[in-house]
Length: 299
Image 1 (cartoon, one colour):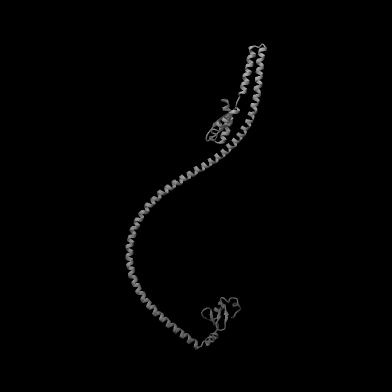
Image 2 (cartoon, rainbow, N blue to C red):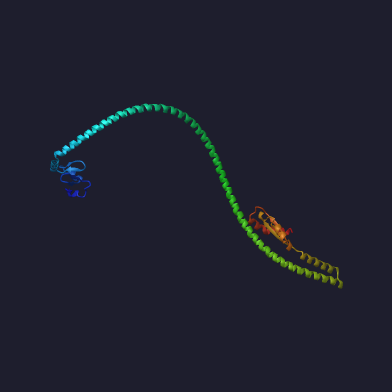
């Protein structure tokens, strides 16, 4: 194809073309020329010469062939019309039968609708009752949720108490370990004190014997005799002196003092206990000194 004008070269997609000379025209150029005859699908005759030339190429045979094809098409359409007419009659009969069956079905549907209406009334009553039950159940659910929240709060508190008890137990274990170490040290000291006391007792006994021997040899006043008797009683009291061990704790320390007293009684210790159930370790340790002093003053 060849563009007739320069402006038509770049716009082939929107162009008109001559079916005779195959010239290309822009849309505006085709509208501007008065000699152009527009056909279908952007086909044109650019001039009368092109139109006559195209008409000359069309011969009689082509027209005859086209006429024959049109005749065959008409015959086919007539046969199709006959078939459609027969189908229409059959369809009309089917429609009549369908109409009769539809009327019967409609009557049965009316009866069913009556029954459905009655069922709907009963269902509405049941729905109202179910809504009332749902409201009551919702109230119960709300109360159960509140109870669950309260239980969760209590569980949280119990968990915190449990954690605090574990901490307290660990502190008490550490304290017991420290007390065990102190008890070991005290046992060692007690052994040393017993050795010293035995030595002091033997020395005091020898001194007392010497004093009694001197009584026979020397003249003494009543004041000297009472002084020697007081020294003898003091030495006996020193020999019989015992040490006390005080244990202060919560319910976990119950019976601890009794067990220690039975095991440490032989080495000169008196073990006593103060039990305060459900008491924090911090409160126990903060009051140990005061309670120990009070307990010692009451001795």
